Length: 202
Image (cartoon, rainbow, N blue to C red):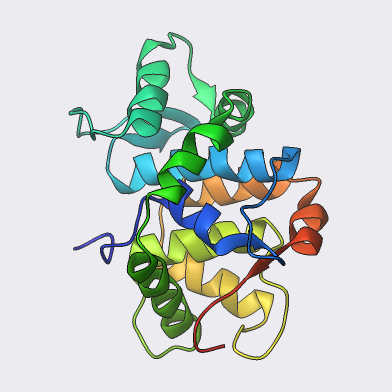
């Protein structure tokens, strides 16, 4: 089963969607950095590079590099860690790795047509006009955990969003990443108040 629809990796997609109300990239904050860290783990899970076993992050069945400096760097840290560590532990560690600055360069390189395609895709999924792939569900679940999907026309209620994420991005890794994100993002209101998820069709 395909895991994604050609959209950018989750950390890049999140920064594209989490724009400030003036259209500029979201400023780094504890909440945003936590969500970006969680998105790195989520992407590695989608790419089968990591999995969650007995509550701990472990290497997955695929071991080859992804050709992405941020993702491969995180995978290297996970591989080098001798003790089993939880998802929340890895979110906290990756949060301290200053992912935001490295990812902004990637966001700046995204072509406008690719940005627009991502927004259309998310709008179609949220409106139930397109069946979500695991990558769509992961992205929407992370946006929800960040508190960035405030109720408005075109965006379903939180229960429906969480049901979508649970049904289409399932398994121990998915549940642990979303739970760890929600528990760690104590400043989610900051994201919701200072950024906007601008999605075509809403």
